[in-house]
Length: 178
Image (cartoon, rainbow, N blue to C red; front, side):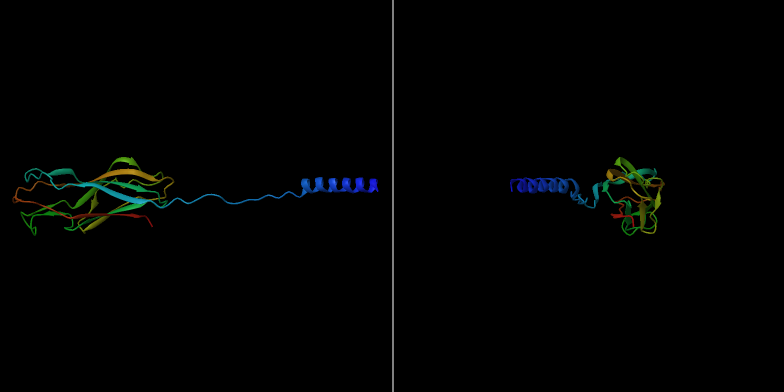
C-alpha cells in the first residue's frame, strides 16, 4: 500500500507539473485614458486709443492681441467680425466721418502653431463684408500652444476727416476646423 501511495503521489506531482507547464493563462487589457479637447482663446487687450492723424496713413496698427491654445487634429479657425464692415466711424460715418481700413491682418507674435497646420498669417483678409475667417488648414500632428497674435489694420491718409472719435466694434470667435 505504501507503493500505491507513493505511485499516486508521483502521478499527482507529474500531473501538477504538466498542468503548470502547459495550462498557463494570459490576461490582457487595454489601458489608457483620454485627453480632453482644448479650444481656448484669450484676448489680452483691445486698442481703444489709436493715435489717428488725418494727414498720415497708418500701416499695421495693432487693434487687438490674443492667445490660442488648441489640441484638435483638424486645427482651428479665428472668425473676426467688424460691426462697421471695415470702417472706423465718427458718429454715423460718411464723407469726413469715416476711415476705411477694409482688411485685417493676423500676425503671429509668439507661441507654437501645431505641426502640420498652415499658419493663417500669410495675407490681409477682406473684412468689408462684415467678417472674415483666418483658417489653419491640413491636419495637426501636435497641439497649438500659446499661439500669440495681433490683429492689425491699415488705412490711407485722409485730410478731409473731422475731429472726434472713430470706432468700430470687433468680435473674435475661435472654433475648430470641421
